[in-house]
Image 1 (spheres, chains in turn blue, green):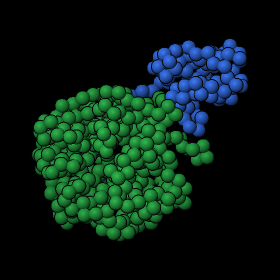
Image 2: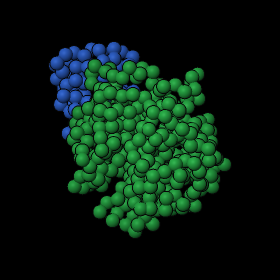
Image 3: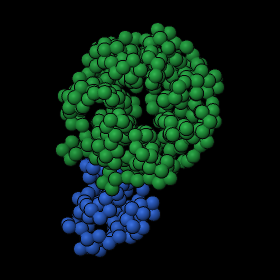
Length: 93
Length: 360
């Protein structure tokens, strides 16, 4: 199974400059996708989730356009060919 | 001789340098732009100075970064310098303190973090291990976070022994004589006006502690109301706030060379965190707190701001240099032990931490 991950430009450097990444997760949940992403790019992985595995408060993740906070969170099912988009939330300073 | 002043702010790090004996300063930065730098230190035990910064990316979480070329480039450990072990169920919220150990332990660096935790690095600050003796302390569930969060914010390793003294917001002073394996509270005499028991064994909101030049048993503390001094390693503390215009404040610093000399920056009260009358002043004692003298020619008379606990420091010069950073983005330096100050920088983001070192 292959999933496409879309990153904001500010994180692309942590993935070798790529804003689009093809990821082959070990399972079919968002957690599996993020685990695989973190295995390949550890620094990117911890920008998205803390050491408990929780998605950081001001990081929004969408699976095929749906905000995972209103879906199944990290257990959200991800299909073959799905698009996982990471966006910084409305915050800053 | 160059004096280097590292300035951590809400939105990045600035470096000020003086090559004329701390009379004039040039400012470099911002480094780490848009990242909160709540903790900074300059480790001068290495062949070249290493700047360590406890940063918070905002969206992307906290970590420790370092620079070995005075800010030109920055590095961080891929997996993160500070990560709570899985069994703790905790996540790093903020790095509050970075403290190099002694010259005899050149690769040891300590970190104090939120949630209340103490960390030790043996590789110069690239990676840290949780000090389990502190984390597993039976008092920990009762350490309450202060308004800024619950954290280890002060770390005082004794260069001549395995003693480490720490202070925590909402926990108080704790001391270990075995390098961190076991800890006991050392708060007797320090008040806790926000608790029903006025003199609890622990739970005080001690804002900052500094070791006196007399030796490791002698320390001073700026408390959440009250300024205190101990001469028996914290077994008993006595008030030394009598000569101050207010006993609230955050920072306290001691002279590295002259016993009995300390500085504080009074604020009116916890619910009025501004200097008395809006006049930003540094108060100094030269007699172990028996009397205090207001200093600060050059500090502003209408400064409705505050100085954070780590936005105040001294250097190792003689006379001692004193440095003040304010929440309205000003930094002042004194080369005469706080008699007078010059403006180093203004219009910075709010200043969270300053640290001064002398480089050859």
